[in-house]
Length: 209
Image 1 (tube, rainbow, N blue to C red):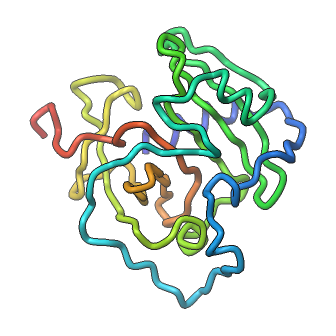
Image 2 (cartoon, helix red, strand yellow):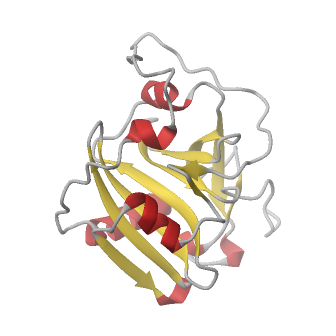
Image 3 (cartoon, rainbow, N blue to C red):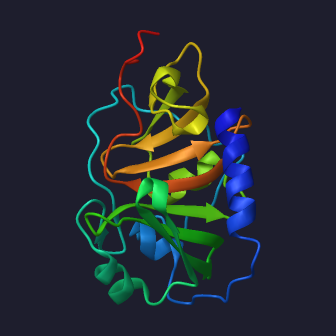
C-alpha cells in the first residue's frame, strides 16, 4: 500500500543513525497502565472490539497533552531529544527519542512550529506488537477502523483519510476515548501507535467516493 511504502522509506532514512538509550522513557509509564502490570498475552485470547466508535478525545502522553503542550513542555518532561528534524513544507519539527526499557522503541514527537504545540507522539516498537499485547497495555475499549486516501485533496500519503470499510488503504485499532491510534499491518500486527490531537480521518470522503 502507498502509505506503508512511504512510511518505510521515510523512517529508514530518519532512523539510520543509532541512538543512545533513554532510561527515562517506559511504555508502561507512557500508557499509564497499572492494572495490566502482570498481564501476559495468550494465544487463545481473541480480541473483541466495541461496536460503538464514539468521539475522539485528546491523547495524553506522560503528561504531554496533544494540541496543548509546547516544545518547552517536551524538553521539561522528556529531556533532550537525540535528534530534531524540521520539515519546512509542513512547518513541523519531529524530535526523536529512544526507549530501551520495557520495549525497544523509537519515540517521535511532532511539533507544530507556528503554534509551538505538540501535534502527536508516535511510538514505533523495534518488534511489532500483537493485538493482544495492545489490549494488555491499553485495555479492551477499542474499535477497528479502515481508511482510504481522499486522493482529490492531495497526492499519495499527503491526502487526508476518510473511513472506507469497503476499499481501505490502511487500518487502525483505535482507543478513541484515550486519543490513541494503533496502525495495523496486513497481518494485524501493530507497527506503531500514536497519541493524537484530532481524528485520524473524516467519516466520509470529501471527494465524493
